[in-house]
Amino acid sequence: MVASLGALAPALTAARAQASPPALRTPNPPDGKSPTEVARDEPYWRKIAAQYTVSDEFVNLEHGYYGIMSDPVRRTFHDNIDRLNEQNSHLLRGAYKKESEAIRQEVATQLGARTEEIALTQSGTEALQNLISGYHDLGPGDAVMYADLDYPDMTDTMDWLGDRRGVDVVTFSIPEPATRQAVLDTYASAFRDHPRVKLLLLSHVNNRTGLATPVREIVAMAREHEIDVIVDAAHSWGQLNFTIDELGADFVGFSLHKWIGAPLGTGFLYIRQNRLSAIDVTYADESHPPSDIRSRVVSGTRDVACVLSVPSALDFHNSIGIENKQARLQYLRDRWVNAVKDVDNIEILTPDEPSMYGAITSFRVTGRTTEEDNAAIAKYLFDRYRVFTVERDGPVKGSCVRVTPALFTPLEHVDRLALALRDVAARFRV
Image 1: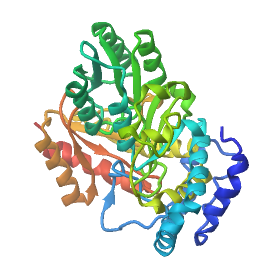
Image 2: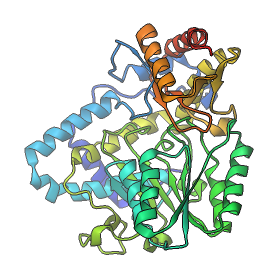
Image 3: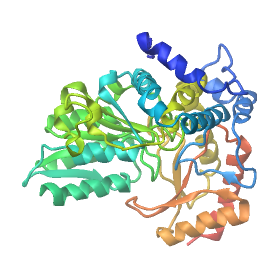
Image 4: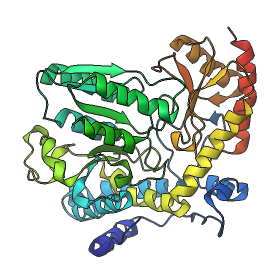
């Protein structure tokens, strides 16, 4: 639930007022319709698509890297760049401090967290690396754990703990097919088999196949084994509908430039208030007291125009509604997946359980398991059909091709992919 911004609301209003109002106003979802019905309301989504400026030279089904800004956000960002350039350090040393605090509260409120549990970062990667590297309750004889589908920068940081803290690093594979029960059983088995594990990295939605894991249940199991969990929610917030309490985790890293649609260079970390002492102050930072979560992030001088544009992105996000966003993204995913289910050598790497996926889903042509194979498939899709996708490696049974539609993706684009995959299945058959 989104609570009142209270005393900081005037500061947010002032932050928004500094930028010129966008020329386009986000249309409200149709009244009286369920999210499922809204997801299929093509006239409404055409109005949403009209608020994005995107290339018409190819079909972009690779929105997992970052989320394109809507035109209202993009214009606000441009205005904030001008404002920063014109006011220089007068802005940084003055109004920005109050405005960024209001933005921090708005982010926390959206998440269902306390403001003092949130620190703004330059990305989900920075947030998660600070949490992992700062987790200090580790020493020789302990172990840390992650799965094969977790994000490479995060797994690299977990590996770094092996050298830095003298701990063992335990890895395991998410099964295919990755049903909800199979995932839960895999984590339960990993916890039983490795009693020295003290810290787990857990992706809410992973970047390789798009699998959404049952975070709350896994966190609860980990606690029974006295394992702390750092959750990578960079891909889930803005794509799936949840609050921080529904995750149940004490440490979480988020991105704002993926599914919230803020400018590149925005994210935040979350530390539950009573667990702040578990994460070290970054580089003995003295700009904030150790009791302030912001002492866990030292980014130097950053492009604050990105941060000042976050409220516009949240406005756009809220105008559509997360329930409607999730329903639409799942509908687009389901449309192309269902269209190729009869193709015997196209393997879909996320299950059809609604709680286990959002927009992102990867496929594999049976027998085509190398990075080179899947890079060639992605290249063929682009060269022959002008459909842009990306190869991903890491899954236990081999590499795959990732497909990620966006809110402005029309049905014709996922239909073109489905048609192209029939050709791909025949051309790349082993």
